[in-house]
Image (cartoon, rainbow, N blue to C red):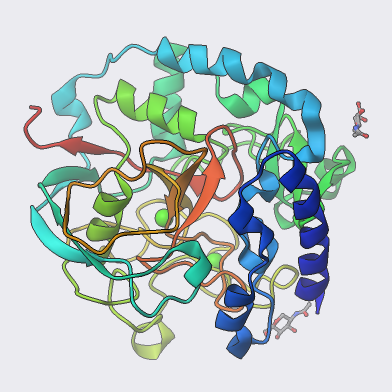
Length: 381
Ligand SMILES: *[C@@H]1O[C@H](CO)[C@@H](O)[C@H](O)[C@H]1NC(C)=O
Ligand SMILES: *[C@@H]1O[C@H](CO)[C@@H](O)[C@H](O)[C@H]1NC(C)=O
Ligand SMILES: [Ca+2]
Ligand SMILES: [Ca+2]
């Protein structure tokens, strides 16, 4: 019921956003999507994240250009300048540590049995890819610190002076300084001074989280980091191919069953009732260290779950079915595709911890559950 109320709120917000040019498709707190989730009895409040999109409708609710707070948009330009100024300084051999080779091949991208048709999960279509190297794990806080130490890079969350934090992660003292929540997804708070190193704002730190994925990084920040390492973000096709680990038409990187023998968890998502009762049954309430859980057949960990991962591609939801070679997504767009779902996802409202699932965010948005990993071309070094 909570979700349904949120859904209505979201529709109202969408009407406002439409005036400022937000994509049409998001205006349909989609019948489709609601239908897709009927069996779960809820209006798919896509948990999240910046995808806070309730009703799973798209993910712009937490975007920086949303009506919420006009004044924060002013520093965006500065930030882009910063990322352009980043010099590629990492030694290439060194930066290839922690990567595996993903073999060239053909696969079927997307699915003909979409859970969220409006997300453009379908149709299933043939894609052919060259081989490439991929980070076996999400980029960690420690790795991101090396980048910041070497370049003095300032993330967009720092420039804006805030980021979106999931309310359950904050202490009471931290909650006190927060005065704006997102109408469409009230579990997200625009939190002053939250950024990668102080992920919940005041008095938060990374003391026991250096090996967890970096969060509160925008698409622009992720691109700057990968570039510094002599790498790049994966295309959506590369990401999805790698996620599947050579398995045809399976839901998860490891197969079709969410848990293993004896209910063993395969990745970090949400157990319990969202958003108030997080049982942490998989061992982790919020983010988990990047090296947790079993790798898929390609040696990649937590492709689904833990944090959403940015890809290089612009977002669209209509795909042709002809064979594509090394597709790079639409030439133009506003939002970028993110993949894999996060620790906030549960089947009842954000069943997006599947290889073909997808969501989107603006290039300057950041949140508690959004990170990335990098890839590199095989022929370069
Ligand atoms: C939120 O609180 C801060 C600090 O108390 C204040 O400076 C700011 O104006 C408030 N913002 C809103 C939208 O109320
Ligand atoms: C949270 O969910 C668990 C398992 O469903 C239940 O045992 C527990 O009582 C719930 N806690 C609260 C505070 O509702
Ligand atoms: Ca968990
Ligand atoms: Ca992930």
